[in-house]
Length: 122
Figure (cartoon, rainbow, N blue to C red):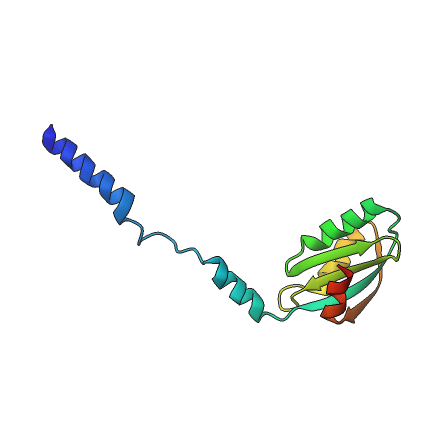
């Protein structure tokens, strides 16, 4: 009985402290940010027809913000524009157009803008 208890204690100790090398490795937040910093970021101004209220802004921001590669979205129903910060290597404008039209709006135009001017609009 004592041998069994010792065995269980040793197994518990090994499980608690000795098995950390075999599991999947998670990347640290700093490693993720370094990868993100190496990717080029672009800014777009999208002219959207049909936005009439803040609910429309939220719909556009949610639709575009859920797309892969999109970092930030700010929609403004008053001027009918959405400002998008995205990673071109990951995201694309075709999916943005599809997302806007499937949300019930029309994309009138897409214009590339300087990233600094986008950050001022945020």
